Image (tube, rainbow, N blue to C red; front, top):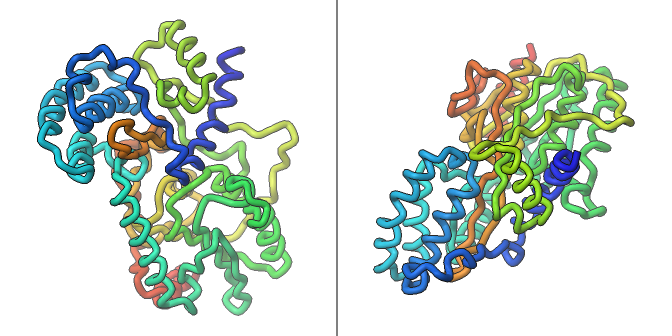
Length: 381
């Protein structure tokens, strides 16, 4: 029972960690307490020291390295990495060495960056946001909000732009709208006006809280019929740094003999007060792009595996089964920051569990927003 109580708190604590990742100052600094008696660590420069801590953290945290033989390969490469860091002259060069160490594990969940690069990325993101406003009058142009919907009665369509898996609850900001309340209003208005065509546009959505995706899914399919992703968690020292209860869970898990084994998270459940919303009985089209990622990618995967609608747009950059749920960290000697996955998500369709991308049912060029909307509209005919 203790284990179950601890695990029940973990999901909430990880959600807090994701919010922390928005504020670099709150990233946990990796402890070097286990390395203070290591001669190589004591005599190394700042890059060599942080390289050793990075490899240790990667081996201890990422679900891929739950298997000993994989950790052995990683640690075998450590000496060459530390040697390369001996002549490292900048944080950017150091980051490139760490990225090479990550290899195929590097994605939007597991990555490393120096503060100068972070600032450059933020500036580029602002420029991209400005460019996306070039077609501001188009229905499918990014309006820059979290989400909104538009009823187009002459077409019999409701267009829902879902830009971020976040709302007043997840961002702890009561001035923002609530996703669940907006969905209630939207589906009520659709029913009142006889709207049977829904477009869910997630082309700008790079993730957030999967709770919002679930709240949409249960309005498209009864909860008891939904096939969900199975989730496995890796306990680690980094996770315990954010929540001491996780250190207790880790000790209990390993004491029960689960060495080098991921913890299978319980499947999603609903509370005792849950009331199944009325299920939409019309046709739904979902829009994805190369920017659709993380929780928004999970939404698309569950749409596909539960046969809930037609997916259009471009091939995904996410893998339907993937590593995710980020833990942010900071390296103590250089200040270089990063995030790392702590979970593995397996899609319901086990026949396609190793697919590296989610291919849309209908490929549509999303560059010209007006033409793209017309092309999607014609799919309802």
